[in-house]
Length: 263
Ligand SMILES: [Zn+2]
Image 1 (tube, protein in one colour):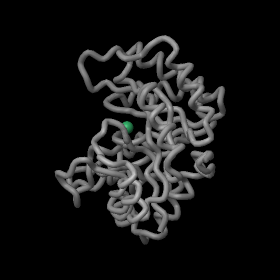
Image 2 (cartoon, rainbow, N blue to C red):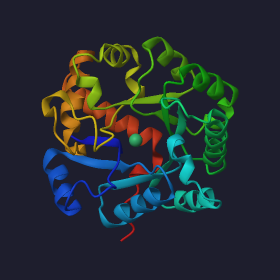
Image 3 (tube, rainbow, N blue to C red):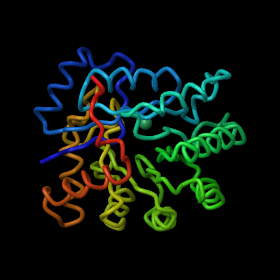
């Protein structure tokens, strides 16, 4: 089976030897991973990893909780990285109202700038959306024209009912380790409700391991098989069917996943 992790973080020095991690992924059948950038620095790191390791792809973007680090010119750096043959999307970008000091207007502005950038480059986006469902839906509806190259809502955490609304805007949805936890009824209902051609797997490593690896840190993309197994069980499909579908969905949304390392 071919497994894919469409959203993980490989920065922070928590994995030890990255080469050894890549071997572990190959042994687990995880054939492709997308290292998600969340600021200029981690987006650049993604490019370095993508050039070194054939299985690795990356995204370039500014995360809504990282705006304090933003420096003039960072968005131009993101645009330059986006031209790389293995940069599959702009992101992660979006809205996150979790923290009380949130500057909603600033988040909205930076999100819109990145949606416009993705549109101008004919690229899809990876969207982070936390505790902001109503504003997110309204913003995406107002700017639906900027989504025509596709979008992923990663680590989907809103309701199954809202998933139908986001789905109508063409969005894809990925689920990680949290969707395997007993208490994650909402995510499990969403997995059951979302159309098969919009589902993807991710880990958002190094956090949120699946229930089989409870307490393990760092979580790694090698835990994708657990996440996929749970997804298949919820949907009443074989693991092979779900894996094949997820693989195909990922390549439909992230067209540069077909590109090889430019070595
Ligand atoms: Zn992330």
